[in-house]
Amino acid sequence: NLNLHHRRRHHTQAETIIGGNELGRKVMEEARHSAIQFAQSHGRKPSLAVITVGTLKRYTHASRRVQLYSNHSQSWFTKTDTGRANGFDVTEIQLDAETTTTDKLLSEIYKIRDKVDGIQIMWPFPPHIDSARVFNAVPVEKDVDGIHYIGQTELGKEDAYPPVTPAAAMELMKEYGVNPRGKHAVVVGRSPIVGSPVAYMLRREGAAVSVVHRDVEDDILKELVGQADILVTCAGNPGCIDAEWLKEGVEVINVGTTFSEDFDCLVSDVKGDIGSKASRFSPVPGGVGPISSPMLFRNTVKAAWDQANAGESGWKKETASIRKSFHFDSYTEALEFMQKVDKLSTVMDHHAGIRIVHKCVKGVDLEMSFFSFDAKELTEKDFDAAQAVDLIHGNNQIKMSDFSYNLQEDAVAKF
Image (cartoon, rainbow, N blue to C red):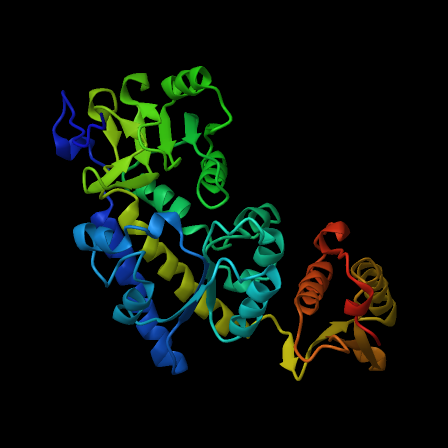
């Protein structure tokens, strides 16, 4: 019995509801205004590509959800229309789950990624798709759904684009003054796109974080939920949490939602009367959901500005190659850099073309290029190698094994 009307016994609804509708409108309006400014400055709209393989379960009732709770100018389920209404160009690519291989999906990413400012790869994938290769093919500067967020943040890049739904949850908490610092936050769910990153974000905000998931026994789930000062539900499993388990005064952020055909509405992961225990909670619908799409477009317009201002990464794309010039004050420094690149190239089995120009007292210019001799187009390895070289040049520590490949003999580039 899913109680769909959560009520608070001791406080008014206005005091207890952490609503996201107004915040979602605010974030989208900010993104729209920035997109208009970008178009005026650069003669084109910020652009987003959304790639989906197969039919996602959560999209089964997409039309009905838009009809009930949203509109085509701000919905997660109508990104082309939402983009058009707010000054963005959106390309949605739908691939067949049965016939799409990892290589075919990678090919689609390679074809589109130089034509757009941001890329969103919809998750989950069919089981035969190599998700690590796919995610790695999304350039960091175009990663508007935060695939690389945790890794980039750990490397010190504080302005990495965050995953949009976790970011929406955190933005909602910030808006209402839900402060995680020093509190016990319990996250129910561990998906790579919601549960894991929101747990990471909460930890960065100073919370002691527990993550529970389907492999945790029910009695442990109940015990940890009952200890939470802040509970973030993102399991997408209706009724997996009983409101009776909640600690008095807990603040609940409902992220996981499921459309119920029986009730013709969205339901949360919590069954029962949340308001009987929680001091505040985000409703379903009307909580985190209205903020997710605006956060995606916020990231996209920021990516457009960032790439325009930075002149991309500095790597210039030419016919089947990319190249970049590095300057060093001395020949010794240039040689040391080349040795580091050579070590990386040996691990990757993908060596750079190098041209050295010694300018005497003015130092050394080192021009580096990557290309695959037998390939007609740039490959995943070329962009990975360029990214790794940038990390080396920035004196960042990288794990060489992260860039190694197991290739068939006929796939190895020849020079």
